[in-house]
Length: 253
Image 1: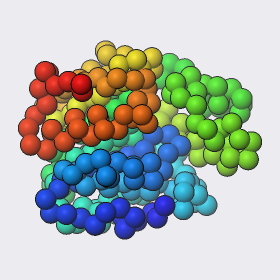
Image 2 (image 1 turned 60 degrees about the vertical axis):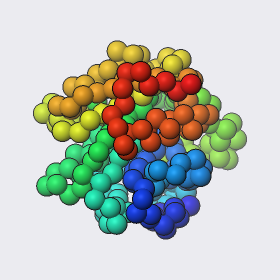
Image 3 (image 1 turned 135 degrees about the vertical axis):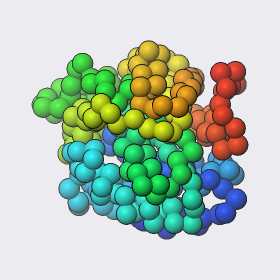
C-alpha cells in the first residue's frame, strides 16, 4: 500500500472526497475495498507511519502530532477539490475530529460533514486502559474493547510485528484529551453499531458538545467493528450527506 494518494482512484470532479482515518492497528489499504461500493464519494485515505509500506517508520503516540504529520498528504489529496467529508472509526474518530479543526482553520477547505463512528465524545476518557499492560493483558483488553479478534494476533510472528503499532495507536487514543473550547462549526453524524458494547447511545450522543451545529445519532446493525462487515450500509448513509442532511427517519434497511 503506497503512502500517497496515487494508490487510490484519480480524482473525479463529479464526486465528493471522503477522507478516511483508520481504527487502531489499521492502515490506509483497509479503505481500498470501499472504492467500488460508491459512485458519489472519492475515497481518500492518508497513510500513518508504522503500517504497511511505512512499517519501518516510528508510529505516532500523540493525536495532534499525527495530524501535523499527515496534513501535507491530506492537502495534496484535496488539491483538486474545495470541499470534503471526513470519516473516522474509534481512534479514527478523534483523528478525524482533530483533522477537521486543522482543515477549517483559516478556511483551508470546506468540511461539509464530520462522520464519527464507534466513539464517545472526545472529552470522555476510557475507564479501563490497555496502555501499560503486559502483552497478554494488552491483547485481551484490546479484544474486549473491539469485540473483534484481529487474525494477525493469533499468529506469533505477525503478532510480534503488529503489537508495537497497536500499542502506539492505543496509547495515542487513550491519552487524547482536546482543549474544552475546541468546538467545530461543522455538522456531525455519530454512528455506532447497534450491538456495540463499548460505546453506548449516550456516549455516541456526546459529540453534540463538539459542534455548534446539529448532530445526528445513527445506528448500523452490528457490534463495535460493524464496518468490517457492513461498509455498504455506512457508505450509503454517508452518500446522503452529499446532497441533503440526514434526517431521524433514515434507516439502513
